[in-house]
Image 1 (cartoon, rainbow, N blue to C red):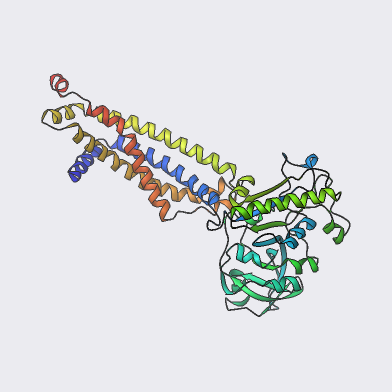
Image 2 (cartoon, rainbow, N blue to C red):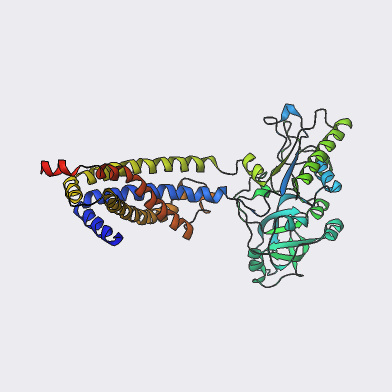
Length: 437
């Protein structure tokens, strides 16, 4: 029976090619607009570390006071004094600090030019906390952190560029005229958004290439390549030591807490630390701290660009308009067949049979519109960069799941849109049609 309904629907669509083309185009354009913007929204709103997003937290400490806060919120990063205090206290299961570095890489081949590589100065716990995969070797350990050893972890891409993809563990790499011993090579790892460095605006930046110990970077006075926020006065200090002792924030802290009890205990620790600073005269305001997990942190930092939300809303509105037009076209098409429907009903066809035939016809329109939508979605992917920033635009891609979603949305939306025209068609009284004809 289903095949019979498809045959009837095909014949009906062929009898009115103009209406059929208009409906297919309406569905195709509406679905394509929705899928292109959804592809971007999906890329920027996903969970970058779903297996641990509820266990990783960003501590924030107010070192400026209510006069200089933004809507009562503490700074998005820590200064050196507070960051090191958290590390020395070691109140978390795992903890790390990080700041962005930009180092010049000197290839072993003297004929090749040096180039800049971006990465992070951090602690060895960084790799454990964020589940960083390794191609060769592993992260450095606590001993290297404490000894301030010149070791490095490099990315698979950088390893391919420098060593042809061979196992480079144990070899040396020259960064800013300093020799580092390579202890590990990461697999291709680039969570989006880059939740652990929202402070420096690197949510959708290029993948990191190098990682060096935080303690060694401080010992060698390697400056931050990321943001450095010194508050209202904008004073960084006259030299390195005054900068470290000052109130400029530039270090992103992360802690791993596995249970609700650990979270509560860490909040109490933060409040106790801030209260201790107040009693010592450094702060003259009540503790104003935050402890946000990954999801809360991304929401707070507005990781999802507002233009992606707006574009998705507009595209869905456009799809609704297209569906309304489709409803009108289907209604006109079905009601023109009133005599045919009356005869079929008089010969014994039930309302259910009318529903099945016309909904099958609508499904065929939806499927054809979905195929057109796939083509238009593919073309739309090429033009995303005209609407979104290149770093965001390149994240959107047409994969198998989006193909299925496009077809499913087109067919489902069209079938749902066809219910009202089909209902009107099924209500036609056979006697009236027979009398009028």
